[in-house]
Structure formats: C-alpha cells, structure tokens
Length: 140
Length: 140
DNA sequence: ATGACTGCAAAGACTTTGCATCTTT
DNA sequence: AAAGATGCAAAGTCTTTGCAGTCAT
Image (cartoon, rainbow over all chains, first blue to last red; front, side):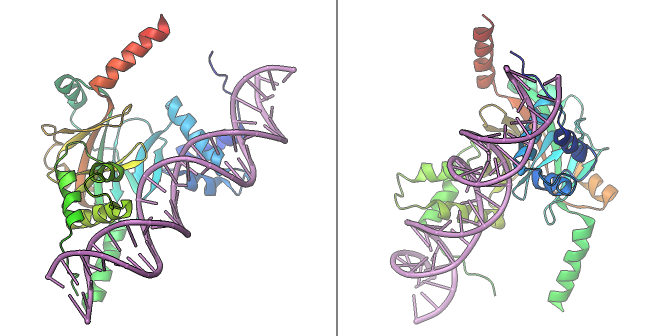
C-alpha cells in the first residue's frame, strides 16, 4: 500500500524556508524562522518534515556541524565549505570532484556509490579577521 | 602557561585502540573494546581523551555517522566510503581529490582551508547482498 | 605536594516518538 | 469517515561537565 501524501500549510512553509535560503539550515533554524508566522508550529513537525523531504529526495543532509544536522535545498551535486569557527556552511558551485570518480570507486571496491561529498573545512573570511584581531590583542 | 601532559595507562590504551583498528570507531566502540581489560574505565574518560587526541592532532573526526561521531587514527589525508545501511566506514587510500583544489578554493573564495574531505556514500558489498535477498523475498 | 587524570553521575543538547486532536481528501 | 499531519511533552541518544578521589611527576 502506498501512503497517501496530503497537503499541509506548515509542510509547504518548511520546504519553502529550506529552499529559500542558502544558509544550509538546521531544524532549529527553520523552526525559529517560521515561528512568527506559524505560532503553533512544533519542533517535532519540523523534524518529521525534514525526514520526509529527505526521503522524497527534495532536500539532503549536509552532515552534522557543531552538533546540529544541516540541510540543503539544492540537491544537484556540489561541494561545500564549512567554517570550523562559526559553523557556517557555504556552497562551492564551481568545485567538483573529478568525473568518473564514483564509477571508479564502485568498480574498484565493489560498492554501490549513491553519492559523493567533497567538503572543505577551515576559516571563513569573517572569522579569519576576528581571529587576527584576537591574536593581535593577546600578543600586544 | 603550557599545560603539563602526564602519562596515563588508560589514555595509552585508548590511543592504541584507535590506532590499532581500521573500523573508524566511535567513543562507545572504544569503551566496549577496553572495558574487559580496564573494568573501571569510564565513558567520560574516553570522550575526554578523544577530544584531547584530536587537539593534539593524533586522531581526527570522520564525522557523525548514524548519530555517533567516528574517529580515524590515520591522520594522513585520504578518502572514505560510508555505508548508508550498516554505517561502516572504510578507507579509500587510493582515491584523492585533485591536487591544488584546496589552494584553488582558498584563493578563489578567501577561505583559509585547513583540510578537505572526500566521502562516498552508498552500500557496502555485504549490505548490498542482504538487500538483494530482501528484495527477492518480498517480491516473490 | 602539585596539578593532571579519572570515575561517577548529573546535566546538556539534539532528536525521536506516543497519543490525542485537528485537517485534508 | 478514513487516514495523514500536527502539538505537546516525554523519552531516547549521544556527549559534556562538576566534583571528589586517585595517580604521575
């Protein structure tokens, strides 16, 4: 039996929130974002819909950053940069792993490769500047 | 003031456990592994030492897989495969992102790139077979 | 003796889930 | 009316932390 999917105002709002931002939000972010417009929204509903959208392939997880799972409304393959200081996640649309790498891993190791993530970690420009200021202060 | 680092039998055992396996263990795995030999070992100690080793650069995190953070005793850069079914993490020593990619991201976007992770997700051979059996059963 | 390390248990943070109620079809 | 979706709060997991006792130097 296929489950019938029904429309829901909040579900729509949650998907719009994720697809309308490039910040790769967490459940909490979505919740805080929608709370003013939907005062009776529950955090559980956000989590349930995030799981639902993921299963439907409408969004995907970017992984857990500083304890919170982060999601991406863009499902086309692309790379990410994660700032180790502020935890922001940024798209790197131009950066792609070599084509054929998935295929090569599949055949070489016998895995079924569903997808491939290329992620860079470091400091974003904003945190870099604050860091430099901090260093200068403490060294003076 | 530099903190003085002291020897500890359990610390040594924890590091050995991580460096002596290729399973990319979680804190819980290390704890269960060492419990027989160190009956009074505490899970808190495992967590504290994992954080300590990470800060020292002796191990690194491979990320959170199915709710648990996983660690790697090999700090030289290499890629990983993560099975979405059983959660096992495997090394792909031969697979490397193109050289110069980090540098290119650094200069193109103004980030300070500390490291770069290339991770493949899919099904490992073992889970693939079970999956096929399962499908055959349900379809028959 | 000093300060680092640990065990223990409590607390914290994030996420999941059971159940009654409300909505969509 | 039937089945899905939600709110609420409790429960579940994983991880961190405070404190008193232990151990290395």
